[in-house]
Structure formats: structure tokens, C-alpha cells
Image (cartoon, rainbow, N blue to C red; front, side, top):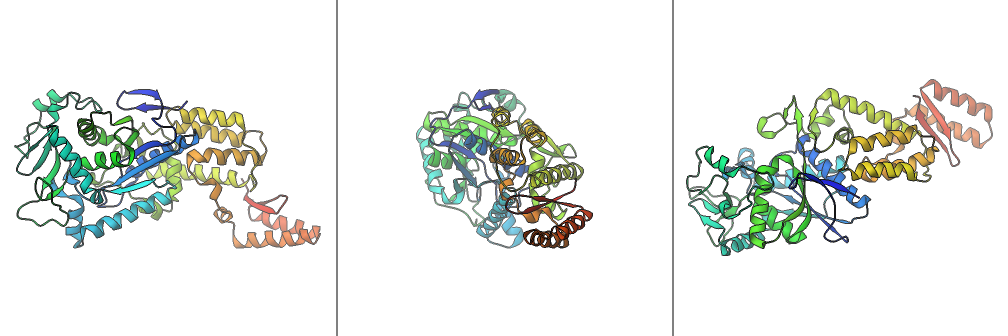
Length: 459
């Protein structure tokens, strides 16, 4: 029984899909105006573990992720410059080229972290018609009003607005700052469609029933998720920073339009901290995956590091903690290599323990404890290997694809091992023993298997 913490109920709930043939999963993707930072990527690792866990317990997953390439303004309160157009202006490039470049960079980061791609990628700019259609539906039902700068959603007409974040709407209204847009009826109202400025030609703008402009940030996720997953789907996931505004507004506009529940389970990953503060582009303190690599760390070390903390717990990043994670990863990898290259049988008892931890709201720290227990167990090496590879269907560390070259055996050691194999094949046992000693003097051991010999580091 997979139990997940549902943000909207603030409780652990047994996961029961709408349709067991395909779980509908929507995860908020990147706004492609800059590189993703490792705090963003922590969320995508958590969502990848979630998807893997669903498949692990027998639920096929239809995973949809958006690419925000228009409509996300520099201020989340519906004013400021479009983030993609701003980068395009600063770099004297086309907005579509900026979006394409950072989309490719994001997908590259996913591959490096062994994060599986979604079933459906959907770009906001390629779903303008769907967004306009959804706004029309809201207009027909009386949920919108028009100001000089755009079409706005009237949050006062939704009785349970703010239920995800449990917002104190009255308190927010009383303590609201002076709004930049004084035409907004309520501080929580948000833009569904923004009009293009009269004195500025935008690179990305479209005709609409209300005027030339572009969609608001929130409407894209509602329109695209419902297009691909239906009016009500299973799971919506993202970072905890989306709870008070973006996801709150998605729920309001979606349920106002359809009269149906939007997503049944809401899962949110906590912040990655740096120096005990939130890592964010706006704070200027973000670290990219490229920076991690430039420091000499394999990206999988970062994934391994993220598995050490529960997705609903804050994780403080320092280069020292990442270095410690590398020590742990190297130790684990060497032990895994020492198990040989053949699979035995998956141990049912250990698998059940691992499954129990995964089913407990994706408790990866405790699941990793079971991983180490496998290595310390009295199973045969082949059974240990098979069991760990089974676990890796959730962990996503790529164990089945680790190559012999990752052991980084020096060329001299590799050559001695080859010469020894030839000596053994020719029954030159004395020479084979001499070569073994040379290999051991260089800090390596030779493990003979039925089909060949295998190198591993001395511990």
C-alpha cells in the first residue's frame, strides 16, 4: 500500500488511482530563461522517484511536464517583464532561441541525473488555443473581469479559494501592500491573459477575443494538464514554493471552469538551502549542475546526496556535504562492483523491507539504509547484485548500466589482468600468480568468475 502525503489534506493517504491502467501525473516544468539550479533539480529528482515508485508497485504512469516559454513575468504578481523576453533582450537574441537553448540545457541536466523524461512534453507557446478556450469557459461562467492591462480571475467568486495553502484571505486583504495594478478587485486576483503594451512590440503575442497579448503564468498548467490527463487526474507535483500562488491559482481556475476536482493528490518537495537560506535565482545564490561538474563531482553524486533526505525535509547544501556524499557513493559503487557481473535472485525479505520504506511516503533515507543492509547481508554476491538492481528501479542510480571503466583501473592493471587471463587459459599457473601479485601491489584484486576475471579495488 503506497501512502503519500497529500498537501491539500495535510495527511498521509493511501494512493488509489482513478484508473489503474495509467496514473495521471503532472509536474510543473521549468521556465526556460536560464539554467536550472540544483534546488530546482532536487524537485525533479523527487518527482522522478515518485514516478519510479508508482511503476514499482505496478501502476503505469502517464507523465506530463510543461515547458514555460511565455507568460512568466519577473514578478509573480502579474507585473514586470516576461522572463524569456528579458533574457532575449539582454542577450540580443530571439525569444524562441533563448527558450530552445535553455530547454535543451534542462533536458541535458535530466539525462545527467538519470531522471526519466515525461511521457508528454508540452510548451505553453504551442497551446495558446487551449488556454484561450479555458479563459472563454471562465468568462461564460462569470469568473473574469477586464482591466486596462488584462483579463483577471475574480478569486472572491470561489468559496474555497486558497484551500491548498490554507490562506487567510481576509488577513491578506487587510495587510496587502499597495497594488501596482489598482484595477484589481482583490489582492489575490490573478491574470489569465495580459495585453501587450501599446508602446512595445513583444516577440511573443497572439490575437485573442479580448485583445492582442499573451497568457498569464497559471493558465498554461491548467489548460495543458487537462488536455492530456483529463479534467480530474491523479497527482500534481512540484516545489513547495508553488503552494501559495501558482498551484492555488491552478486549482481555482480549473475547478471553476469544470465544476470538478482538479488533481486528487498534491505532492510538494521542500527547498534546497544554501547557507541555511533558500537557493533561488532571484537571490543570486544558485548553483547549476555544470558548476557541480566543474568542481569534479559526477552528477549522480548529487542524486545520491538527495536520496539522503526526505523530499518533504529541507536540505542544506554545502560543498563539504556533497564531498561526503561522494565518499559514500564511491564506497557504495566499489562494493557494488565487487559483487561481479552476474545476477542471482532478488531476496524477497529485503525487497519487502525496501518496499515498505518506499511505500511510506517515499522515505528514501530509510530505503537507503536497507540498501546498505543488502551489502552487509550473508547473501551471495550474485543475489546481492540482483537485489540492488531491483531496488534501483526506484533509486535511479543507474546501477545496471555502470561500466567496468567506471572502476578507473589504471591501464597497467588492466593489461596485467589480460595477461593473467591468457596465462590461466594456457595453464601457466606460476605466471598467473606472479601477475596477480603485481595487480595486488598496485592496490587491486582479481576476482575469478566462471566466464572471466573481474577487477576491484582493495578496501
